[in-house]
Image (cartoon, rainbow, N blue to C red; front, side, top):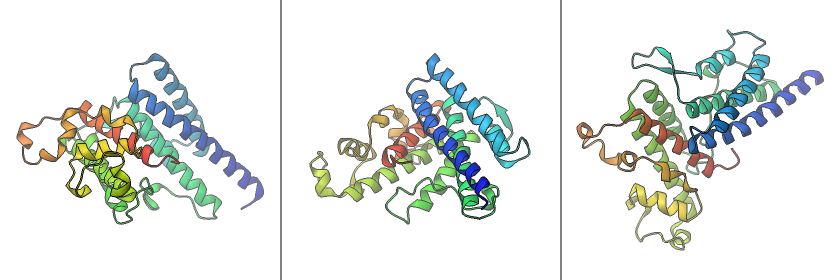
Length: 260
């Protein structure tokens, strides 16, 4: 790669890294204080900065896949799959973070001498590299995509159950990696981790310092998600509950992968 192009790539990567760090802070603040005027103002400034960078990377072309992904991050899908405006602020921030990470991946491939192409033509995002069980990683990666699709299509029960399933899977993976003997000092109950309830796994993980207090925001319906299959007709999940479950999942993902 020519030296001047190398310098440009490094500059863009540095800028993207800064935007991603700011975006995560903005996301966490919005999750905790969704109506805070300062948080909303900071979000708008960050989104504008993202737009400037994406415009530079896409060469000002709205047809470029990065520009399209950026625009689509602000939309939500109706049950029929049509795009409509009105996605929640925290969800928009998370989608923009995904776009920024895709841009980082493309620039990194360019730096390595590979051709840059749209994400659909390359390897899928690797959000779960922190999971210790290598066989579990592709499973939760696919489930993550399924949960987002269900949310956009208005299937809030499925979106919530899938998000909670991912949450339980990655927390269980962290608990198993820590080991029962080490967890005993954190008040872990006797018996196998596989026999613990969802609530118990979250509580022990928090006491052991594996995760912080983000799970306190889980809606009540999420804490009993395992029972939805048996009593589906009796359970009504709102869009707000489904989105909150997804937000908690993102917080825990960062707890388990602090370097992300």
